[in-house]
Image (cartoon, rainbow, N blue to C red):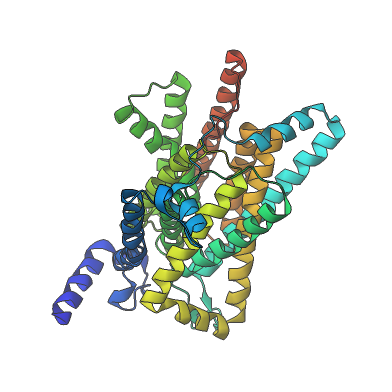
Amino acid sequence: MPSFLLRVWQGLAVLLLPTALATGEESSILEDWRDVWLFRFFLNILGYATIVIPGYLLIRYFKRISYLETGRGICFPVIKACVFGSESKTGLLDDVSVAPRNEAESSSSTRQALKLLFCAAGLQISYLTWGVLQERVMTRSYGAVDAEGGGERFKDSQFLVFMNRILALTVAGLWCVLFKQPRHGAPMYKYSFASLSNILSSWCQYEALKYISFPTQVLAKASKVIPVMLMGKIVSHKSYEYWEYFTAVLISVGVSMFLLSSATQKHPSTVTTFSGVVILGGYIMFDSFTSNWQDNLFKYKMSSVQMMFGVNLFSCLFTVGSLLEQGAFFDSVAFMARHSEFAFHAVLLSVCSACGQLFIFYTIAQFGAAVFTIIMTLRQAIAILLSCFLYGHAVTMVGGFGVAVVFLALFLRVYARSRMKKSKKSAGPVQVQKV
């Protein structure tokens, strides 16, 4: 039986991981069948299931016996918070964000300019460093004696997700302790849905870099408005403005130009494999679910930092449980012990991710979603240029023009959306829409 399963996974590896990724000089990323991304994905899912299924059964049990009315004792407050919460909802996202926006509008223009510069610098430094380190960790070896090769390559994307989440949990927890937060009302278990999709999307994001270039990944993430619009049209029968269709077509054209121009290059770093496309599709799907579920959770009275704490709490639980079950946790720690450079990169990667989330919340609270989107769109463009400069990705003139078309379309979306909001003069808070 083991030999049969081994042959099955080896066959899947041949089908799902084309050998076009490697050149004559470069050995394949896959050294044995256990490194097949599909196998590792399902292994992670099984690890999460060992936590999700017992948790689901416990929640069903406590609700069936009406524990909220009959329960008592030391565990009652914990079970009540995890399973029932206070069940009090509000229609607004976050009362805390209203005051800073009003204060910002009444402050001097010089102070506003300094705040904007601070937000832009914080977002750019955090996420540009994060992008550079992400590519370094996933695509380069550690301990190599020379530039020709050798050394070890870190392969466990899930451990990096855990590192990011444990630090983000610490930062969010300290923030909640130091600064006053709204009274929490959501049942804690509801964070687990967004947490599960969030760690899967992050895993896909790291794993995709084994098969595609970083610029390709950035463009694919920038173009996720297309599947979002398609799903909205098919599932929810939403109607869109003409400029939304126009910019979606522009994004499709720009991404196609970049991908087709990259496919003609011989440089291995620009080769896009079928596996990379599938993994990116998984990232877009899981990330879309995360944002929609979080929007639903914000109906409860909570701050963005409370959301950050709740999601990361379950993310740490899921990832550390799965890593321990696979025996990968101590393997990754041993890799860190062998390579101090990797340990530094992994910690700095997590610091940048956690600080970036705080800058996101602060920027949206001070200046709104439109300014935040412009800053992050600029960050994506700079990240592509920085990756090409540092890691030698070859981009043709046609590919560069395609990148320019994509970002032109993204800026047009921001401009058209802000014009529409001004014309409608709609009351109430502005929903954050990811572009």
